Image (tube, rainbow, N blue to C red):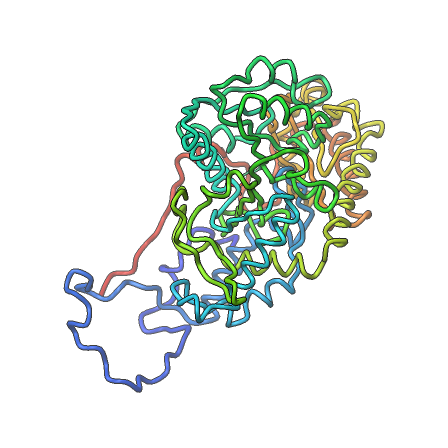
Length: 496
Ligand SMILES: Cc1ncc(COP(=O)(O)O)c(C=O)c1O
């Protein structure tokens, strides 16, 4: 039976008692005595595990994986998420036993290779950011943001300052204000000017000695580079605040300009975006941060350091550190992949990747400015874009009666993952499109043609888009309910 016909079977409902997908070697050491584990850690009955053969196991998970849309099967222009191809070479390197089987509690003396890789990665990221000190600890971009805001607080407190507010532009990714709130600061919004940049007058009006930090991404989530960045840095530093760089959009500027050179004090990277990694679905991510000299004393501990004798170590002796933000040193597999990416491309290659990302976005934008598309999906800010751009579906909604969400769902019927929708918030019916540097010209042209075709189709029969998708394993979901009230079924086999 295909997975489509039996969508709800769990792995526990498959198989039969005694079936195995794995043959353990015969025990060649004495069995552990019953009391080897303290009583409170022992189970009364064995764990209830699925009992399946290897083909059943493989088919179960392969069929499940086919129920989702993935970057390996089709175009995935999800703005702000940088869904670019993950070179298979990285997987091979990350799977080498020396990497994959390294225990996180290994003594540093016996993990020199791993520490050296981490130290080299820190150096490379520091160079990309234009800021010398790097911690690899955070597990995601948002985790890097939290680290950055806590570092800002430590920096101010060390100077005897109790600041209460953090500024975020109204184009900011939702994780920015969420981080600010989590770190105990008040979120203060800064407006956007007619060019899509930070409204300098509003920034000047909001910036005072209570402001701890401005969090900014440049290019912004509108895909626009803010050329006023030097002035922005001057205003922020003028009131003694720090400037935080949300590095999720680094894919547009690597090797071309550096946040440190723009005046930023703290940067987070999304290794799982700019430096390739399989991501999405909550998979492991990595959000290292880079900071300037004045922030360095507060960086998380331990730090990966190179000793004078050339060996590598973990430095726990950091008296002003904000402490640890997670167990162990971070998601090591992400470090290996990011390092493989940096070493295989080199400085010129990283720059080329960014230039191609920007070229691809501008080419696609030019294709979408054609007749039959631009009148329904105009570009929100009509300038050269960086690695992504925002269209507004407001005229499409008004004139064709379909919303951005309907168009997005209909794209799935054409084998394309939808772009990001309804973000950034200040563009009505927003569609945020990021093609990335790894897509071919033909793919971009095909996408533009598909959008034109869907708009023609909607003019004739809007119901097709309103009811889409029709070709996917599940039809349209109530996404808010699915996220907020998930119905999760886990049937455990009877313990026995
Ligand atoms: C602009 C921006 N900032 C921050 C983040 C947060 O990164 P993460 O998802 O790794 O927590 C994202 C994620 O999509 C983003 O697009």
